[in-house]
Amino acid sequence: MRLLRAARPIDLVLADPATDASVRDALELVDPVLRAARDLGLDVDGQYRTYAEWPGDRVVTTVVATRPGEVEPAGFWFPIFGRLPYKGFFDVARAEAEASRLRQDGLDTCVVPVSAYSTLGWFADPVTTPLLRGGVDRFVETLFHELVHATVFVAGDAGLNEGVATFLGQEAAIRFFAERAGHDAAEVVRARVADERAVARELGALRARVAALYQSPPTEQPLDERREALSAATRAALSALPLRQLDPVRVAAAARLNDACLALAATYHTDLDVYAEQLAARGGRVSGFVAAVRAAADTDDPRHALGLPPAASRPDAAR
Image (cartoon, rainbow, N blue to C red; front, side, top):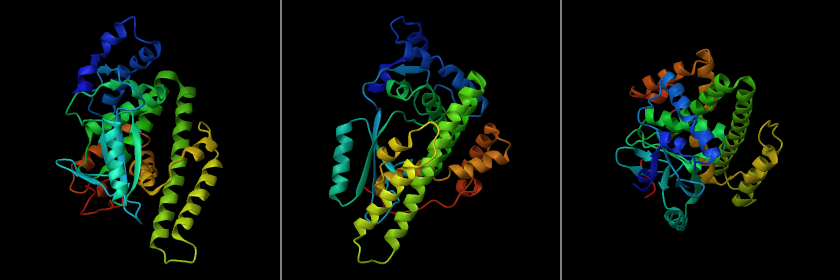
């Protein structure tokens, strides 16, 4: 309610001479993004028509947890939405307290700032200040990402929801800048997206190696040492990636490679290469892929309809 009450119509913010130039430049892109999203088949009615000034680097702080010896999220169960791998808090202290409680219960945790989220169309979500701090291209990509959430939601399958939104946000942003700013601008975004996908592949490979480690028989070398050796090898691999827009050394240094953070990364990035193949099979038409996702969401088995492997399932969940 605090967030919604802080929201002002974007038209009024743009008309206000006191509006900062960087905020103005970003907000002037919202209407073109909404038009492009509608053309792609996304639901945009009522979304991102307002702007809320909001302090700090986040709107929400998310907590993810994994049990010892696992790289799948322990998860949290919510009415209507089903099991989700994360729990979000508007208050940072409450998020940290939840993570502390989970660690006391023996779980590994990952606490991350989130600059935007979607209420799935239940409320008129505003653009917020933290959403603008990542630069114009990430701002546009995130708007598309969140509009996907407002369009398609499969209860209990965050991996599908987040993976589709991540992929479509990236691809829609590339095409948006190609049409609005030309080939060179689009290539900058394309290169950054390619870098992020390369990093995601390394994290996915580490997660697979860690899962295999936890299933392997004990050796004379302590498990913790073997686990740390895997992380060290991944940092070396990340620092050697031939990235074009991201600094591989900084990426390697900043990477969070504990089990819970790997689980969170997998939620967003596991199936991106599958989606890329499907988009290519549709001649690169993002609208065709959106239509396929919407149709799949209405089936009894959306993952099967999209050619994805079954989701990891767990009948219990973290409290």
